[in-house]
Structures are given as C-alpha cells and as structure tokens.
Length: 507
Image (tube, rainbow, N blue to C red; front, side):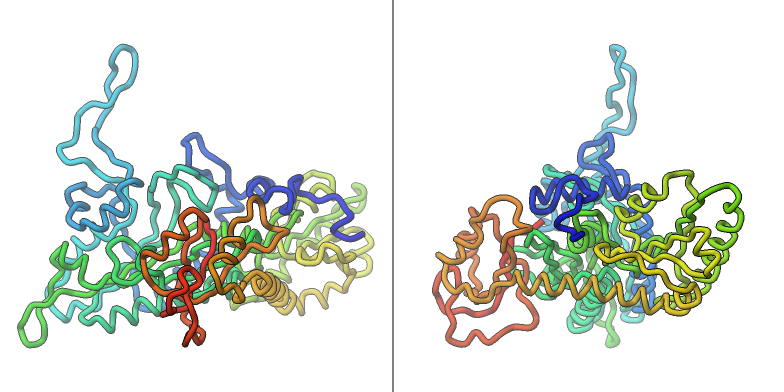
C-alpha cells in the first residue's frame, strides 16, 4: 500500500495546512508544548534530547576553534544598553524590562513595589554587557584575541509565537570575540559561519545557502552580518545561524581599547555569532512527513529503539534476554565516532501502539524481536525513511556489523532528499518584476505548490526593497557563490544589477 493510499499518523497533512501540520508533528512527537506564559514553550525530554545532541556537537566545534565558555547575567542595566544607539533601536520593541524588585499585598492582591533606580532589561542578546567586560579584561595586544561563548536563554517578546521558530524565550549559544585587526575579526566571522554550515548540513542534514545579509537585514549595530538560509517544505526560508562582524562600533560604545606593540592605543574589532533552538524547527520542517518527525541519526536522542514482542509469559524471559543482549551489542558499535544510542521500549503497551509512537517521534531505526526472532537469531528492521517498504528480516550479526553504515546511509538519504526538494523550488528564471510579483502573490499553504526562493540580480539599493514590503518578501542573503550578472537587470527595478540575491518569504 502506498503512502498516498494509507491513513497517515498525523491527522493534518502538509498539503492541507502546513502550519497546523507543523504544530501537530511537534505535539505527536512530544517535542514541546506551549507554557502558561504566552509565547513561551516547555521543551519536553525528546525535544530537549535533540537540542542536547546539537549542543554537544556545536560546543565541541566552538572549543576546537579556540573559544572558552563562560556565563553572564540575564539582567542588563538599561543605561548600559543605551550606550549603543543602533543596537537599542533594533531591539527596543522586543525587550522585556524589570522595573520593580518585590511584591507586596495591597487590597488582597500582590502588586509590584520597590521601583528600581535603573530598570533592568532581560537579556535579548549580550553584546553590551560583554563589551563592558571586555573593556575591563583587555589592556594590551597580549590579551588579544579574546574569544568566549555562553550557552544561555534570551527573551525577545514575540507577537506571533510558534514553538521552536519564534518564542518569547528560547535557548541558544552566543559567541563574542575581540581582535587586534579588522582582517582577523573578519576571518573569525567567516570561520564561525562555516561551523554553522557544517553543523546544519552534516549533522542536521539541512542544506543551506551561505551569504551576506543586505544592509536592511543586518544585526543591529553590525558592520556585516553573514548567515545560512534553509528552505522549508512550504518553500519559505528559515535563518539557521548568523555571524556578525561588528567592526569597532561596540568597542567605541564600551571603550574596548588595547595598548599596541609600539605603546599606542587602539580600539578592538569585535564579532558575535549565534545559533538557537530554532534549529530544531528547521529540522522538523525540512525532514518530517505526514507520519510525523523524521530525525537524522546524528542528532536523534535514540538512534535505535528495540521493541520486545511478548506473546505470552512463557517466552517473555527469553525475549527480554535476547533484546538486552542485542541492545548491548549495538551500543558497543560506533557512529560518527560516538557510541550508538540504543533504547529498549519496556512499556506495557500494544506493540503496534509502541511502533507508531516511535515513528511519530522520528527514531531512525526500529527493531522488533519476538520469540521466532530469538529462535532464528534474526530481527525485524523498520527504517523511518522507508515506511512504505516491508520490514526487513535480517540476521542479528549482520545488523550489528552494519549498523554504522546503515545510520550513515539514512543520514545521507535525508540530506539528499532535502537537496533535491530545494532544487525544485529555486527559481533562477524570473527576470522581471511582474513575474516576481506573481510568483510571491500566492496564498495559503504551499507544500504542494511551487513557492520557494527566487535567485535573481539586484541593484543593491534600499529604495528598491520597498517593492518587497506588500509581498511579505525579504532578501535573505547575497550568496557567496555569485553568478555572472554582467549586463543583467535588477529583477525589482530593471536598473543595472550589482549583485545576485536570494529572495523569499521567511519565518
């Protein structure tokens, strides 16, 4: 029976309502749920397990590239943030502010009391507070480069929340560095964007386009912002990581100076870069299908789940002994130079219910072991990427010896499928504004349509971008792999083009 004919595990399909499908996948996979505070989420163990795998890999790369972890307070004095005018302007509407330090009973209700002399902003990002610390820590060229990172939560009030994609509080890492030269800071910016690209493509199996943001899309206060952009299955873009060259802007505001080799004083060049739990949203919308989540083995909390099939009490002991032995053998194997992550589902549930619960959670490989499998030394294998295929019955020895290869193939299949999908949704043949407008004027869920990215020449002017506003389109990036634009006209204005750009609707 084909996937088109059978009933799907997710009651709302992508083609019917992509946003509602996304919420249903998150719910059925037990990834996260809304909290009692509007715009905030509770990340459930399976969802947090995915974040932990992302965090482990990214933290390893951050350390390998010469950075050290630290932690800064969640509260930032308002007068400190005000020192960087463009930064404040960029975040002002999103800032949560603490104005009182206690509650008192009044007329039977708790009300704020004890107004703070200086209001405290709940961390939206940490450039200002870390810049103040850098000004204390850096005295000489010998103190440079200074390269730190923190894993933290941030708060940015969100008017239209969506779990993992846009929440008022989310988890992330933010790196901050100071350098003696512009070139060194630019090299840092490029290096960290490459770390994000590697993480996205080789661990999350999410293909991305790397490039520089136009001026209108830069991080507040940055000289340059560089990013990776991923395409979701509805054709919209999702920014999956950013790296900012801040020049000397924040150094001027915070007075981050160092003594040069010849005794002079210079302002340091700084960078910042970050990736967040939004990566989980990217993963979900890139890989999942109408049966739920599909997880790349590299970031799956459990890469293999074993389901004991107990027919009767007489066979239970033998089946469980065989299952535990198989789990131990698989856990002794390695994939991506790490032990294979194996889980045995011991819940007292119907086997079919168990199986579908793990399908919806996206576990890459599901194994079933019953009395006949114990007798024959075999195992029934279901791969999440191939639900339309019959279960494979293979010898346990063959499964164990080939498990790393099997996981690597699943990882590659997910990436290749995402690359192939993206290729069908990038339009490079739209050359005039009428066609551009018609392409982006479509309404509704576009999983089954052709909404996607337009890659086209652009004149580079801020004025031309006003033609995008009523379409809900932005310039996602100016890709590094620029095509030949000699003699070509801007898709928005018809004027001579100066650069090739990626246009898209986005999350």
